[in-house]
Image (cartoon, rainbow, N blue to C red; front, top):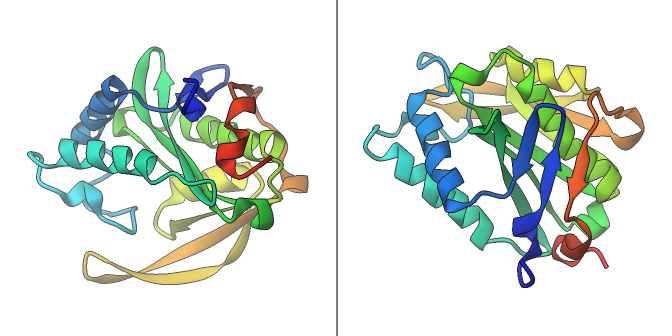
Length: 210
C-alpha cells in the first residue's frame, strides 16, 4: 500500500510466512483462539484474555488486533504479524518498541493455536521477528518474559540465546505468578533458520527511522 506500507511487510522462513493481518486472516486467527491456545488449567498470559466466554472470544481477538494497528505511531509501534503455515493462520507473533530510534530495544510476544504447538514453529516465528529487528531495523537488544510455569516459551528463549534478566511478580486469576524476564543482545543472536524480509524499505519512517 502506498499510504500505509506496513500492511505489505512480510517475513518468510522455510515453513512460515509472517504478514500483517487482513480481515480474513483475523477471522482465521479468531478460530484458532476458539480451538484452544493452552491447557485451561494454567494461564500463560498476564492478561487472561483466553478466559473470555466462547461467544465473546472471537470478537475480542479481532478488535484487539485492529486496535494494535490503529494505535501505530513512529514513537510507539507494534507489528502484530499473523503466522501462516501450510496456507493456514496458526497464531500471531508481535514485535514492538517505544522510543526505538533512541532505545534500539524491541519486545516480542506470541501465541500459537494448541493444535500447532510442539513442532518448532514457535522458535521459527520468533527467530523471524528477531531477524527483522537485528538485521532490518538494527536493534541492539530484544526482551521478552514468560511465567515460570511456561516451559515452552522459556525453551524458545533459551534456544535463541536469551539470558535471564530478573523476575517480575504479577497477579493472574487471583494468584501470585512470577515472570522470568529475558534479554538478548544483537551480538548473541545467530539466525537458526534463513529469513527473508519483504517490503521493509518504505516502512522505515513508520518505525521512526529515517
